[in-house]
Amino acid sequence: MATALDSAAQDQIFRTARTHNVLGGSVTDQQLRDIYQLMILGPTSANCSPARIVFVRSRQAKERLRPALSSTNLDKTMAAPVTAIIAYDLEFYERLPVLFPHNPDAINWFKGNAAVIQTTAFRNGSLQGAYFIIAARALGLDCGPMSGFDNAKIDAEFFPDSKIKSNFLCNLGVGDPWKLFPRSPRMSFEQVCQIA
Amino acid sequence: MATALDSAAQDQIFRTARTHNVLGGSVTDQQLRDIYQLMILGPTSANCSPARIVFVRSRQAKERLRPALSSTNLDKTMAAPVTAIIAYDLEFYERLPVLFPHNPDAINWFKGNAAVIQTTAFRNGSLQGAYFIIAARALGLDCGPMSGFDNAKIDAEFFPDSKIKSNFLCNLGVGDPWKLFPRSPRMSFEQVCQIA
Image 1 (cartoon, chains in turn yellow, blue):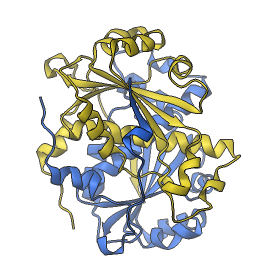
Image 2 (cartoon, chains in turn blue, green; image 1 turned 45 degrees about the vertical axis):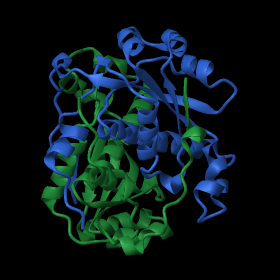
Image 3 (cartoon, chains in turn orange, cyan; image 1 turned 45 degrees about the horizontal axis):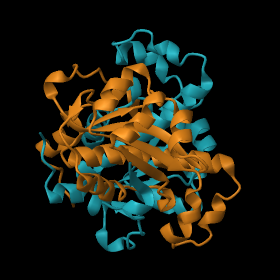
Image 4 (spheres, chains in turn blue, purple; image 1 turned 180 degrees about the vertical axis):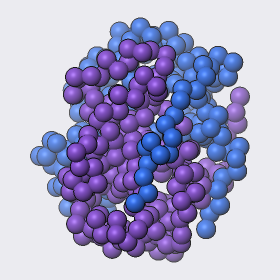
């Protein structure tokens, strides 16, 4: 049986980890690959793995982001070393014959069923987005995830003529703990959970 | 700047962690509280924190789950020490005046806008579901998450007369590594990611 991670490791991925508005430092291509190699191991239903990621790093690519960003997210995103577009592929099921070899029929659970496709891609693509955040933190980077942008503009610019849809953005870099606001309140166990 | 977690810690939350069909051992109420206290710290947009959780542990409560389970998920779920119903509250925005004190107007971003409510609750509730899985693993437990069940039956049984909707189920316990199937294949970095 596994034991709990030591307290410092729990701190790094949850307790002292925070959403950073100001991100600097440098992020290497190898770090982006390392994040991917960890996050892709997190579970998805039938291993459907719908997440798709664009790491926006170059000045030119950052300028393609600019028109889609809300005013409160603009400056911090343009300044971050890398901004990841966490997206999901509505044609994820085409890969199931490879990803889910246990059942060659799995592709037919989805084909032609737009509602099931959307729900499955969005649920599992979001799970994978969270694995991404935790993986980046586990590798010593800080994150600035955000939903405040124009999804349709991002999709038209980065995913034209495809079934890939943006989910959320996540800035990556090294944060400055002195520039953080106090953590916002959380609800108690009793407000959120019950044991039945 | 943080350094990467040691390799054993990365293994425990991602590399050697697996979805377990056979879960035994015991799970204490304190462990359920510890999972919550970690997972609730993960980021959500405007700290909206829409996830709601029912930990199904008693024989009586497990029997209330039974009619909603798919045949492939039935026996393993009835046998698991605890099954968490990971749900989300479509009235999450009522809590924003407390959860997001930076902007007292945040509640009005959502009120009366059913599409934004649904998208926000499902995205962030799913992120929190992934934080839940990672938190359980970080605390030394194994998970068996699954989508194969009748959401409407669960909602009618566990969340009647409310705006809380089930997202996915997650069995909790201690897994037996000898009863695992080989890990299903994952796509390469190049198949999923681009650096722009």
